[in-house]
Amino acid sequence: MIWEFALGDVSKCFGSDFNVFKNRPMQRNPNGDLQLVSRVYDLNGKRMEFEKPMTIVSEYDVPEDAWFFRENSHPTLMPYSVMMEIALQPCGFISTQSGAILNYTDIDLHYRNLDGNGNLLHCPDLRGKTIVNEVELLSTVASGDTIIQTHRFSLICDGQKFYEGDTVFGYFTHDSLANQVGLDSGKKVLPWINENPTEKSILIDLNSSESRQLLNENSEKPHFYLCDGQLSFSDVIRLVPEGGKYGNGYAYARKEVNPQDWFFPCHFHEDPVMPGSLGLEAIIQTLQAFALQKGLGDSFNNPRFSPVKSKVVWKYRGQIVPQNKYMQLDLHVKNITKKDGEIIISADANLWREDLRIYEISDIVLGISEA
Image 1 (tube, rainbow, N blue to C red):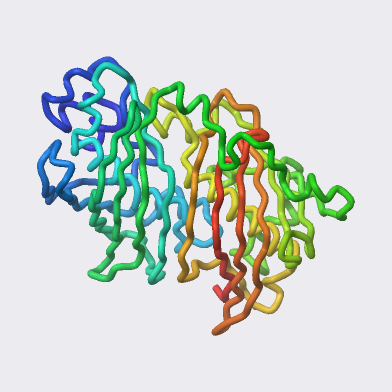
Image 2: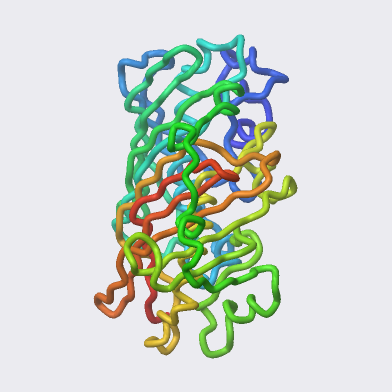
C-alpha cells in the first residue's frame, strides 16, 4: 500500500475517490532511500469531517544496516533528517486520507512542509527496531487554492516515547510555489559573511582530497569525521571561529544544485524537491565541520558526534528544485558547553535558495561524547 502511494496508483491506497488523479501529478510519499514508512493502521476519523480530529498509527522497521547508518560517522547514529522523515511522512498519509485535496480536483496541488518543531526526549539505539508513530491531524483550513493542515506526532520505540512535536503542512499551486518571497517578504537578506567581508575565514573545499583528509576519519578517531556520500550536502564551507552574531563562532556553506542529486527522484515522484529535512542535515554537517576544525573532540580518547535531548524549531518559506543553481546556508554558534562528559554546541541557522532566504532553524544542537 505504501508503494502505491509513493510510486503507483494512489486510488489503490486511498480508494475510488482518488480515481480522478490517475495519470496526473499529485501528492506522494517519498520513495526509495527516503521511504521511511513500513505500514499504517488504526485509522480513526472520517474523510471530509474536518471539524473532528483524525488519528493514525504508522510503523517503520529500521534495518540494522540501513544506508543512513552505514554512511554515518557512527553505526548507531540515526541522522536527524531521517528521524524527521520518519515523524513527518505519515502526516502526508493522513492528509491525503482526510480528503482535503478532493475539493480541488480541477487543479494540481503540491504538498509542502511549512513549520514544525521536534523535541528529542531520549536517544535510543534504533537499529533493527520498529518505530511506532502516532499522528493526529488537528486542523484543516482552506483559503482560495491553498489548504493548511496542522499535525502532532509522537515516535515510540520499545514502549517509550523518544521524539515528539507539531508540524504544519500545506497544499499549494505551482504558481504560488514559484512566486514564494521567502522569509523576508522578498527583501534581500545576505549571509552574515557577506556583510562582514573583512572577517578572516577558513576555507574548506569538500571536493578537494586535501580538505577531506583534514575532516575524514583516521585510525585514532574512527568515528569523528565529516560524512561523504548521501549524507554530504555541501561543496564549500567557510569558518570564522570567533565570528557570527553571538561571537562564539560562525560557519557558511554552499552547494551547487545538481538535477541528478540522489534525493530528487525519491522526493517526490513527478514532483522533485529537496526535503527540508536534508537542508537541516546540511546545517548539521556544517556544524560538525566547525567542531572538527575547532578541535572540540580533542579532550576525548575516541570522540563521536552524538544526539542531544533538545527541541529544534524549523520554518520553511521556499523550496529547492532541480532547476535552481545553488543553495547556501549559514549558522551562528550560540553556546559551547560541557555537561556530564559531553560537549554540546547549539546554533541558529538560515538557508538560502540562491539569494532568497527560505529556511530558518532555531536551536540546532550537536553533541560530542566518548564513543
